[in-house]
Amino acid sequence: MQHGALAYQQTTKTVETPREREAALLVKAAAGIQRTRDAWPVDFAELVDALTYNRKLWTIFMSSATEQEGGLPAPVRQNIANLGIFILNETREILENPQDPARLEGLVNINRQLAAGLRGK
Image (cartoon, rainbow, N blue to C red; front, side, top):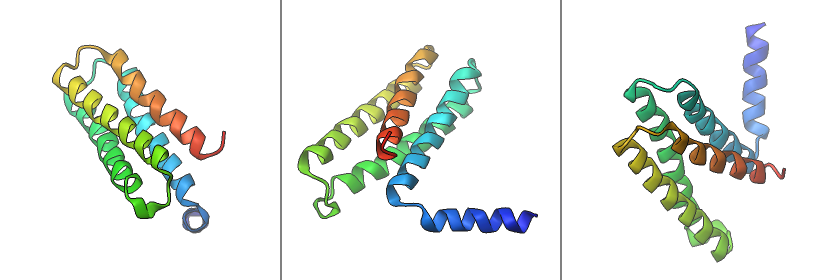
């Protein structure tokens, strides 16, 4: 039975569009941050792990989106860059002063909303 699940996962990966993959990664990052928020207070290492994953993801998005060869219109590239800068700054500020778990909600909401947009919802 395990072979069937593995085959399904591999097939899913091959038919998944780049937009669907990006949406899935955003949802994964949001879920990690949400788990940290729900389990507050958490071990600082858990917070660092969740925020580092999200930061790396957004760094890749920003790098990819701002390339002119990517085919995105300039306003879309700029919006992604602006969101990414906000995410990176907010992440830094949360890590410097991790007393307010409510600040994590903004990061979760941005990821979920962008994922929904990528999925056309």
